[in-house]
Length: 410
Image (cartoon, rainbow, N blue to C red; front, top):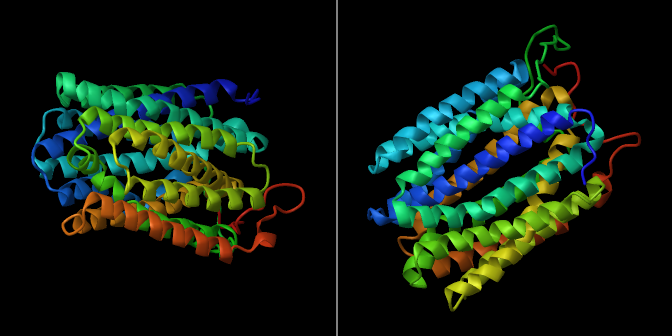
């Protein structure tokens, strides 16, 4: 078990709050996707809706990163939580795609701000020595909450309509906002003059570029996300139209992937070096892509369950190791900006991929999209493995290597 003494109370509160919120998000996402598909929306509109949720991570990354590194964490978390509640309530009743996309974009802004704030706050809560275990615990339990969420979302939508699952998501945003109030640890950065006497802060992108481990790794992972992310648009069509199964099986397929991610996230917490985390990240995305490719040849819907678990294990390893690398190699004062930049890179790749998936679905079948995405992702993972320079990944003696952010940090 994770041994956290100082800050244990705050960590547990944050963990429960984020788990509840993740569960609500998973339930609502399934419900909204089923609603849009049932209302006759073509795949490109589903892709547009999903992309709207990640677009703010790209467009507002610099502003959000600076906001997180220069303002009180509690105020940001509470404000973001209240915005999320306000944006979710109208979705309970809406069916028109235009306002749905607009509100999903608002949720994306708030989610990007609160996500970066939590990421920067957790290291202060648990301490640097416990960071890897804390991230592993947080991600595995958050994913565990998502295991049941897709199936619950499908069941609730089928039994009571799509409004109830979305209302449940609004309630979970209230819970995580209360958790933010209860957490005693606060991150209140102080502006420090840069070396030239100015108050300018380096952007997260600039900081990320200086790290010889993170920079190429993020480029490679973003490429894989770009190639593979488009399958998210067509899963509901693969399950319901190609394999002729019901909405519950769509939720079960999503949940099975999450089950695998839990196992991968737990295993990733045992990786103790930068070198090992880089290798686990690359291997993990290769396994995930192999699972995606296997979807293309699934003869019956139930076979998606073991395939999803297999791919999810790789996904869990890759995501947890990459998150640990990002925070452990970054100075505390820059973690808001680096988290926002990382979200922008991966979120941008995902958003473009979702739009691409919606467009490609006009000419390719769901099976073909899974085959193309999975195989191209495998090829990208292989190239990343060949290009990886192992000696650069070991931490410096005496502690984790930091990205080059000194007096310019806010």
